[in-house]
Image (cartoon, rainbow, N blue to C red; front, side, top):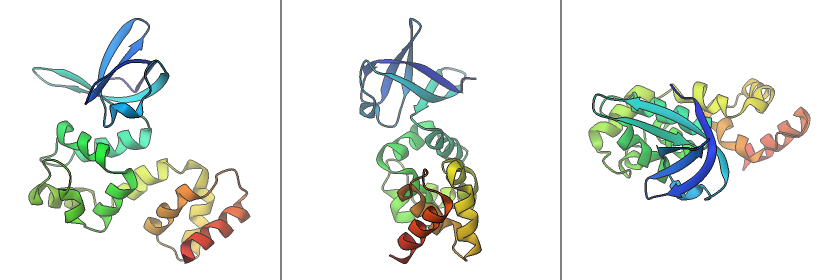
Amino acid sequence: MYEYIKGRIVNQESNYITVDNNGIGYLIYVPNPYSFELNKDYTVYVYQQIREDEQSLYGFKTIEEKELFLKLINVKGLGCKMALPMLATGSISGIMDAIERENILYLKKFPKIGDKVAKQIILDLKGKLNTTIANSSVKDYDELIEVLKGLGYKLTDINKILPSIKSDLNIEEQVKEALKLMLK
């Protein structure tokens, strides 16, 4: 199993990129191939799917994207080819928020996601995403999260404002900034 592949992007197509790593070209299906620049080096976090008739690599720019993808493909009735377009057209926070708020209409806007699959996504993932994916993307904010929880804020509300707070601030400045954002 591969964790990531470091290499130069040598080709982009509508649903995949080719990463050259030491003379070997890896075809990797990605949510948005054009977010990668040609002839530039990247670390692509990958998931390898091995089936009876094919082996495929699915790649992501961030670990958080990969983790959400892995959660999505574990939902009954949702495979790799359905989960990838969800990440291409939706943001990680938007998808997580829709699941937490049981927003079936938001989930149905993705290709091949109907009423039944949207309900299954919510049933399988509601309440399970914040602790795994959101927390892994905010490693620098552990202390801030605990302070805000102590003040009575919910983790879902905290996760919405974290991307707007600079990680290089000291904890007091982070709390001030977070409280300003919470009151908006």
